[in-house]
Structure formats: C-alpha cells, structure tokens
Image (cartoon, rainbow, N blue to C red):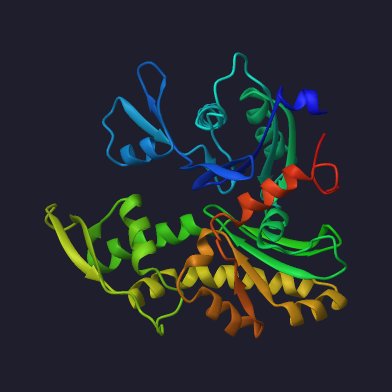
Length: 341
C-alpha cells in the first residue's frame, strides 16, 4: 500500500448545516461556514465559506447566498458539490503534478433516509472522491470525545448541531437506539429573531441573531456566571429607522425555552427506548454533550436537572465530531460500523 499512498489523499469531512470541517493528516485544515455565494447572471460560484458568510444578508439582486444543507442533509445538490470541491482545494497538500484520488469519510445524521444518504455520496463523488465511507454523527462524536465505542458498555451521546440534534445510545461499536430531531442551533437562531420582532418590535438578520446567541444565549434564566447585556442593532418596525436596544441573557433563555424543551423530550424518549442493562451503565457514566449547540450556557445543567443524570460537555464540542471522523478515517479497516455500498 505504501507505494499507492502517494496517489491517494485521505480526508475526513464533518459536513454540517452550519460549519464544514475537513481533517487531513490528523489536523483540522479547513473550518468554514457551510455557505456559498452565487452570481445569478452567470451561475458562477463567487464565494465559499467565510467569504460567502460575509455577504450573507447583504447581497444585491445579482448575488445570492445559499446554504446547501438544511436540517443536516443536502438541500441544494449543485451548491453542495461546489462547496465540497472548493473546500477540498483549500487543503493545499503541497504542489503536485497530478490530482490524487480521494478517499473520504463523511459523517451523516443518524435519522437520515436512504435518498439523503445517496445525495451525500453523489456530491462527494462528483467532487472527486473515489471511495466514500459514511459514519453516523453520534458515533463520530463518541469517538472524538475519547469513548471506546467497541466496549460492551452503554454511553449516551447528544450531538446538537446546526440543523439536527442527534441523541444515541452506543455500545459494542453500534447504535443501540437513537432519536434524531430537526431542532438545533438554527432553530435557536430563528427563535431569537422571532422574539426580537415580537417583543421589541425590532427586525434583525440571521447573522445578528447568531451573534446574540453566542454572546448572551442561555438555557436557564438564572446563571452563576451571567454574561453582560448585549447591544443589538436592527430596524425599528414602527418607524423603519435603525435603532439599538440591549438584551439580557434571561430574555434569550425565555426565547429559547420552547426549542430546548423539544430536545429534552427527545432525550427522555431515547432514555425510555434504552435496554435496562444499558440504562444501568448510563446511570454510572452519565450523558455526553457535543456539537456547537452544547456550548449554550447552562444547557448541561438544565438537561441534568431534567434527567437526574450527570452531564459532561466534550472538551472541544465544535470539533468533537470532526475529530472522531478523522480517527475513523485512520482505522477504516478496524471499524465495521462505517457504511459503504
């Protein structure tokens, strides 16, 4: 195989609704927002990732920004293919006379349908992949956190991403029971937009709502270490004039309450489906949180209060899935749970 390693480039991709991460040679080499900008007149891609993100919500009629993934799955096939291809070009593995063939491991939501699975595989193949392996997100998250997934021990993983929240109980290298719901970070952002419009009569964009979520987002109305109030600028719906208001974390906790309750319900459903022997293990090991959504202040405490179980947040929750996908890539022969046609 040594001779052919030169001709094969192995990459692991965490294809997320909000961000796409690519791992090459055990390092995260690409970490970009999952968005592309297209020139409407020529249909050419004019920006990918961070460059397109800066245009989002600020475009004129000749430019449109597209988020190719919705609820964790590919919604725009053409844009997804260009996005994957563009991000692979960002790797720059030194100058080569020819393009090496690509072997990819891509993570997918556990509740994905066969058609959606095929869309991911086709997009990767059109972007130049010769071999495509798929791995379920909760499994990748568990590996990335450092759990030995092949042990006869039950572990519960909750991966709250941009489009989906994946809840799974893992043992013996497989997913014993899982619950995938399409309520996650994007819904939190929408809730904030809606709340600002309803409560403060101020219209804000998606990027501003995302910023509010990062700066003062919370799952509980009372925190031990509260963030400072955040200044929000938007358009006054009564006068049409731009204005600024200040919001508190308690307000945002109130705005997000309904969506977080849906995630809590899904967690309880997954716990109900768990076989008793694994329930005993989970009582001991607790619940592991990964994904960008798990960084919401007080979320671990809120889930712990609801389930009466210890809740641990991964060290680097944003990259846990990508890291696990990278480890799976290195151990393709060992891990039987990687999906391949």
